[in-house]
Length: 460
Image (cartoon, rainbow, N blue to C red; front, side, top):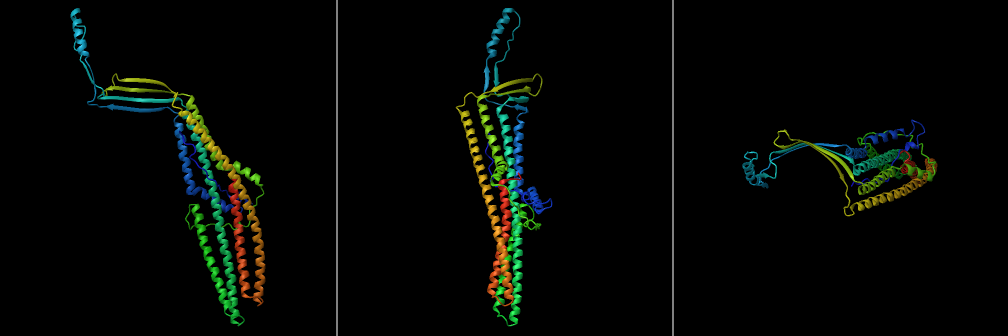
């Protein structure tokens, strides 16, 4: 019996962002798309899936080979000693009778020296050198097995596309994470420059006896805190770059080209939720994979039903030489065969196999219905996640503007001696937090859009 449900489901599928943010052929997503193509060509996990497809393709070839006749060369040579013997007193029975007949007719017409039979049952110095030809005229196992293997190959190819699109999503999000670490480093460096300027200003104030030394040490302490955050951000940058290169099967420290325009043109979703869900049901390769396995299960039902009702018909032939000693003289022979195999009763085994195959079909059909509902749920969640991320971005944008304006006022007041250092540091930290949150929100938009693309599977 051919195993049907040996291919399992990957529920998440990744898609490129270029389908949503590509204003021109050389638009902001071109760099990322090139990296995605590189990853698809070199990723080790995808190579394994390609090898698995090749393995299943060979199973199809093996099933196809059963349609052809089989020709074999089968020489055998036997030596024997001892064992059971065939003994029959032919001479003792016939020789006296032949002598009597010869005496009656007065002539030696009958032999009188016939030996008794005393032969080994196992042939000694015996050869059978032959060619064997076998051909199935009609065999339901061969026909349906070939169809099943082809359907399983289709399922395996769909599985590769599932992995391929998951890899697209993973590469995209890894690239966004790397860009976010660069943005975080830029924000921390700008904050450190502001605090260094504050430190120099406070040193001048102390030198002019208009402030005490604690303003200098407080500013330096704030610089050290930002330096610590900057060190963590740089560590995150190296980790993100290594992970991105790992996905592309490159050296972990290889440089990554930065697309500075990518985060400036954010994707927009104009489709309705219902349309996205229908697109997902048409395009998700998980469904294609399950449909391939379901077709194979249905074919298995037909196979078992045919086995219960239809006989197998075959023809064959043997030709060669057979005899004692390799003389090849008067040893040639040929045997033709025509056969039919039909199991009329096997203790209801065939009925059980039919029922088992039908149950497997019902299992896969139920799984298909479940996955369809899961896909609809994934699209819904991704849709509203993107909607929430869009609203969050608007809120962080407003927060950055307000924090920046407030800081500019406090900075001017502090330089004119109208504000305390604690107020300056508070609003500077507020501006830093707002900028980090805004950076994360912008990257979150890209990640959520990629997640929606993965759920919808528009590029499949």
